Image (cartoon, rainbow, N blue to C red; front, side, top):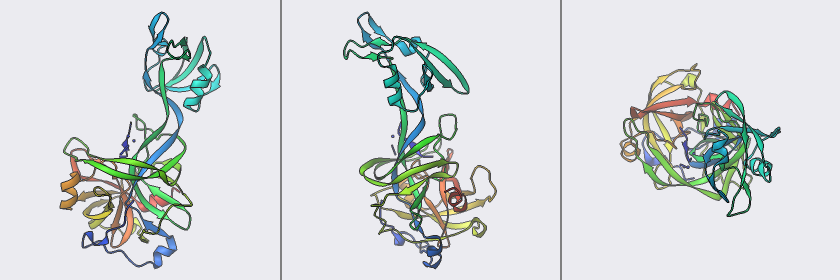
Amino acid sequence: MLGIRKTFGKLFATIAVAACGVCALSGSASAKEYDLYLGGFPAGFMLDTATVEVVGIFEVMTESGLKSPAKDAGMRTGDIIVGINGKEVTSSEDVTEMLSGLKRAEIRVLRGEEEMTLDLIPVRDMTSGKTRAGVLVRDSLSGVGTVTYIDRAAGKFGSLGHPVTDAEGNITRINGGTLYKCVIYDVKRGVRGTPGELKGAFENSREIGSIAINAGSGVFGSLSENCDLSGLTPIEKGSISEVTPGKAVIYSTVGANHTECYDISIVKVDKYNRENKNYVIKVNDPDLIAVTGGIVQGMSGSPIVQNGKLVGAVTHVFINDPTRGYGISIDNMLDTY
C-alpha cells in the first residue's frame, strides 16, 4: 500500500505519547533486549530496481520527419529490456550507451512471462544530432511510506510491512536504494471505493539509511551513521501469541508532520496467514478519520501497539471501507532482516 510516485511520491517527528489515553508504553528492560525503538514517522523511499522498464514511447524529429523507432519495432510500455545485441541491460544508462551510434539493434525484452527479440533501427535526432530510439525507460521507483521500527544496536530499520510490487503484483527486484526523511504536505482523504493518499516531499539531503531488501514482509535496510535517533522511544516487542482482539493503537504521521497515536481495534488475529495478513484492524479514532477517512496510502508500516508492546504494522486498506485494513505481525518483519 505504498503510494507509488509514478510519486511511489507519497511520509520524522517526535512521538506524542499524550495524544490518546491508551498510548502509554511499557518499560525499557525488554526494549534493551531487542533494542527496538518505535517508528511511525514518514520516509521517502528511492529503490534502484534490478530491471529496466519501458515507461514511454515517443517520436523523434529526423530529416525525413517524425519517426518512432521503438514503436516501429513493436515495443510497448511495460516491456522490460533485458538485453541489447547480446549484452545484458541492468540500468537506463546501459540502454543509452549501447544504442549510441548503432544503425540497427536487437532488443531482447520481457513482456509478461514471454521473452521476445525486437529489431530496432535508431534514427538521428535533428535537434541534438544524437542517435535515438524514441523510448523512455526507468530503473528506479520512489514513494512515501512509514518506518515501523528501528533496531539501534544492529543499525537496522524495518518499514512498510508489505513489498513494493509491479502492476501484476510481483515483488519488484531491487539493487538497493536509499531511505530519506520526508515532509507530508497534503492528505487525500479516503472514501469508499477510492483509497486516500499521503503526499510528501523528500528531504534529499537527510538520509535515514540504505535499503537492502524488498521482501514479502516489508522494506528493510541499514541506518546511516549520521542519522539522528535521539527522539525515538524504546519499546518492547510483543509476539503475535500475546495479541488478542480488542483495543490497540497505531502510530502514524498524517498532519503537521507530527507522529501521534490513534485508537484502533484489532478485530481478528491470524498467526499463520501466508500472505502476512495477520490482523484485521478497524480505525476508531475520530481525529484520524476526520483527516484521512481511516487508512490511506503512505500509512503502510505504521506501528501497531497493544498493551504497550509493538506487535505489528499496518499494511493494507479495505477498498470498500477505509476504516478497516490488514496488519502484519512484528514477528514476521523481524524474522526477515
